[in-house]
Length: 245
View 1: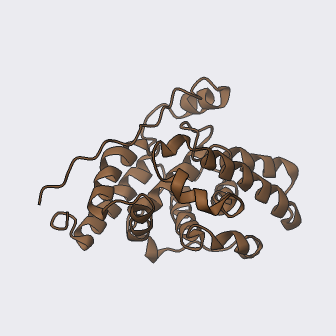
View 2: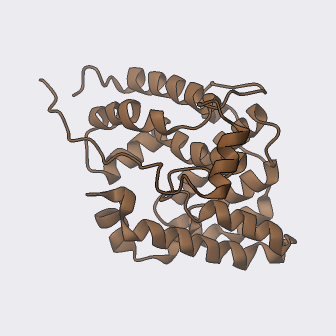
View 3: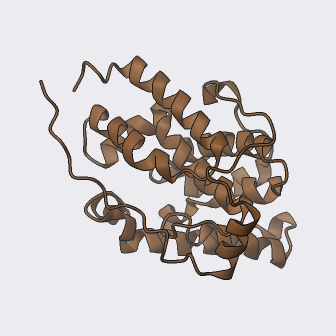
């Protein structure tokens, strides 16, 4: 059976925030795209190296992990972020990992009925619910982090990353870039493929085609590109997407 050609997702528009001084500074510091890695790049299955530490933070956001598969999504993304921090050791590892753990906690504080109906349909990149979950994620960060000993400056750096991780199409720092790439990398793992293809209401074969065609080019770092390509190759072979379409 020949698979029908789906209309492309609306492409991310990196020009919207491109003139922000933070975006300009990041482009100046990292002019080559994708950003070359200076540390080791591990491309084995992500199951081989789960993230470690931050137990108190994980416990503090346990209620927020019960929405939209966050209890799978957040740990997997944290594992990818750990690998990316190894590949880019100049990044503030603690900032990256704390922001990653918290980045989607806001989904637990928006209208759950709208998550799928608005956040994964139509022009999903600009859906109001996505802006709302970012804002709510910042509320969670400002609530839980001070009690864990983080100062106000660190908390605001975390919130700057969370606020826009889905809806802003440019990175403001290497830490921001690693969080963004980690969040997207989960989509290439079989757990992310299963969940996301269901949320978008499309066959797995269509979804993996879109990953290669439309999401892979959005990755900022070369390490993320390498990980995504290896994950996608493993997943398409395992799921037999060349035959089942």
